Length: 312
Image (cartoon, rainbow, N blue to C red; front, side, top):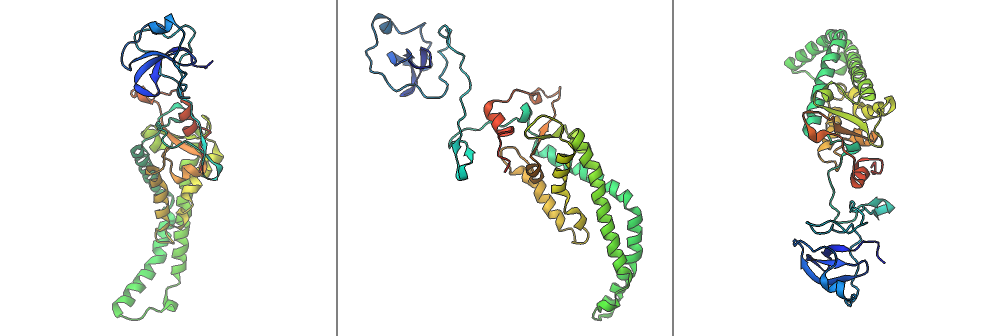
């Protein structure tokens, strides 16, 4: 006896029709799939036992509910979602089977933050950090200029005279100017740390993220990010910062690539620092935007956006 209760279902041999399934086989003549099926089995099935050879049972997935216009048979369970079955992939890693249609994940029942919102929030945060760092670096910047001005004058004189530059004639203040650059880089990094790490650790939001209604969350649980996770996320993105001035700004390219990875990562749109820290950025629910209200994730959404996701 099949676990699927008797009722009218789409015929797997011809999806354009529906037939009566009695729990063991198909009975009676088929009806069009969009037709209103009668109550109970077809008349021919009521008069005599089934003589039709048992056909293949319905697909393993949840069957189509009985036709519109009548109630399901008494005691029949309410059809649920199609079960998601993983298959072994390369290296034994469980993956979804080919042809599976993915839904847009909602980690912890929340919408993912849009790429545009994340980019705009990051721009706001960068500008605020640069303003704060400019204030904190005021003394170092003055010292740098005092040390670098003799070097600049020497270089201009050497260029105007057409003479070959002799490193031995470089003014002694050059090393002091380099030290001031390194100090400014360190101060910039410290200001960024103080601006971002405590804020994301406590609320998941910096000023920029708060302005655009998005926040950082753990991938595996709906709870406070915490200092350790917040610091790891920030460090993966910020480590090139101390080398900005001494390496002519080239380390900043790595940080840009890190952030732009949001646009190509699937399905959670995570930057490289999010992937390293196992975090995800979501839309904060707003009363003016009902679609952002939390929902109960389906099994597939929970697998993609929750603790079952492959962190790689």
